[in-house]
Length: 215
Image (cartoon, rainbow, N blue to C red; front, side, top):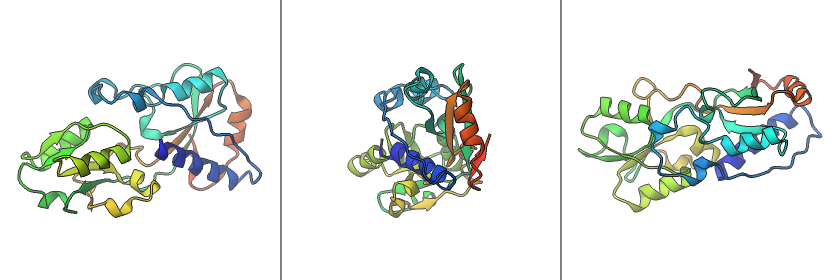
């Protein structure tokens, strides 16, 4: 939840750089993704698992717009919704957070690495087949807590998440892009509105901040 609020504040700050008197009331929703830590990622990738309740609030008129991590958007938005903004990416790489501050190449043989992403699992095994990949779910703080309090040797996390939370000190290695290629929208934020809300569409259309780009 902390990261989600930081991301909302980031969008609000960008809006204020154009609309100086802009004020917003932030409404917090717990999503299915916040509550369900057991459903396999293979069953939820490309769905609205992480955005459903927030997008429903936009559809129902409880919220004027929603802010999401762009990579969490479903492959197809629900009918009645549209994406009006996608920010320039912040720190697209994945990183390793390890107990002994070791990079991937120096982790011990058969090291246990936590991640739930199918793509990350495949790329880790391609790099070192001896790695034991352990499924973990949860927000950033929860995943770091799992690392600190279990027999995991390391976890893979998006660098942008740690930067936004001020946890850069936990980064053991920025994983080179040839080794691990993240989701193309990793590090970007998106704004979703109701399709027929032309007032909101025009509002975002006129934001010219260089780091916020209309879709």
